[in-house]
Length: 191
View 1 (cartoon, rainbow, N blue to C red):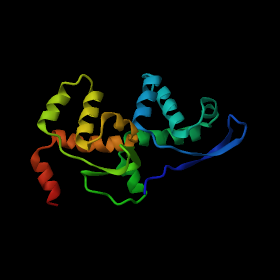
View 2: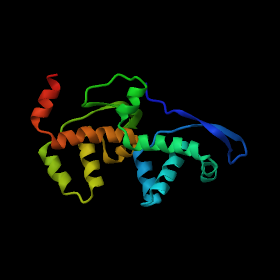
View 3: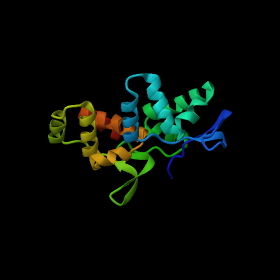
View 4: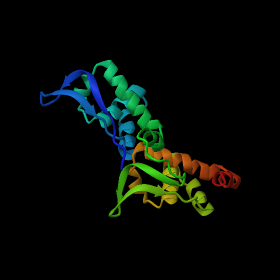
C-alpha cells in the first residue's frame, strides 16, 4: 500500500478556472524531476520557489493559486517544505507503515520502471570504482544522480520518477555509505 497525500480543506473557498467552487485541494507528492524544473524556473527567490512548488503540489493554475487566502497558502507551503526536506520514512511513519531495514527503502509512491512496479528499493553499498567515477563528474547533482543510480540499480532517467521524499531518504543512506566507517555498519546490524 502506498502513501496517500493529504486533502487540504480550504479556510476560504476559491473559484476555479471553470467557475466552479474549490473547497478542498487533494495535495500531490512532489517528484524529483518536476521539482528540479520548477526550482530552475523560479530562480533564487525563495518566495518564487515556494510558489512554483505550490503549483505542483496543488495542481492549481496560477490564477487559482493567487486567490488563496494567506493561511491556506501557508498550510500548503508547509506541506511543500516537508515534501522538499523530509525523507519518505517521515510520511510513512505518519501513515503507520512498518519501518523497514535501512538498506530496503520503502517508497512513498510506487515506481514504474522497465515494465515493473517497485514499492521499495534495495540499496547496495557503492564499490570504490564507482565512487572514483562519481568524483570525476562536474556538479554535485550529477554526482548524486550517478551514485544513486549505482546504489539502487536504477537508470539515471528513472530517478526522475522518484518522489522528493524518496530521493531524500535514499540520499541519507547513501551518505552513510560514502562517509561512515565499516564499524558503523557492523554495530547497526548487531543491535
